[in-house]
Image (tube, rainbow, N blue to C red):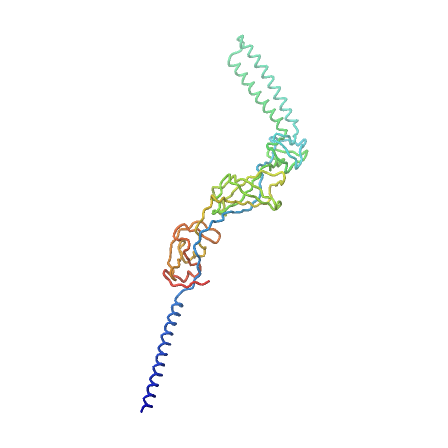
Length: 354
């Protein structure tokens, strides 16, 4: 009898242990299933943190040098080139004679004009004497004075024609090109010489919208040339365009005094570098450009809080390469989604992946 009771007791204990083990395994399975379900509901995203940085706003742009002054010399009158006084490469000064035209015809006009003037002057003086004695009227004297004035104007014009046969430089510079030879017949407007002044040079570059607001007339700019790799030149901004060009960039000109040690030629290729002082640059908040996607508004980002995302509208500033300045809406340390936004809604559960 006792044996039977012991057998029943042992069986009951074994059965109870088995039932307990089954219940424990069921609870664990339910917990694991809930955890897996929760994980499956969470959307995988990548994130970035709002940082405070001091932006590096230096900017470089390429261009070519142009001379401060250049012009094409043309004659003021028609004629034949009698003599050329300069050659290509010569340095010339303003007012220097470059060439002479034959002035035979100009001399004839001058001699006729001079004879007419002397005759008119003699007649006027004779009329003045006659007027004092009553021999001519006031009107006749005034008519003779008008003839004298006309003769004087003709003489002055004839003298200018003589002077115009001497072709002169109107600026300082170098004879870059000579277009004519002795004996050539030229007319007004014919190109004779090209004079280029490179004592001062201008480097013209294009600057995009982001950087042009930091550039002002009078600001210094560093200039580098491939022909002088170990030398940096310093120029001054002389012009900032008020209107963008067709490529939405703004033309900027930098003026540079030419160097005698490292002379620069017009047409040389150069790189301008604009560096902005620390006083002009203040620390700013930035986030990755990837926080803004086409699926969101232009100023909306997803902010991560407690494994959920919350749609946040922000006010942005400058674009700095792959980062965007934040003016309002986010604080330093806030975490924003930079990948996976297309699957998100406000308050979606997320899990962060590397």
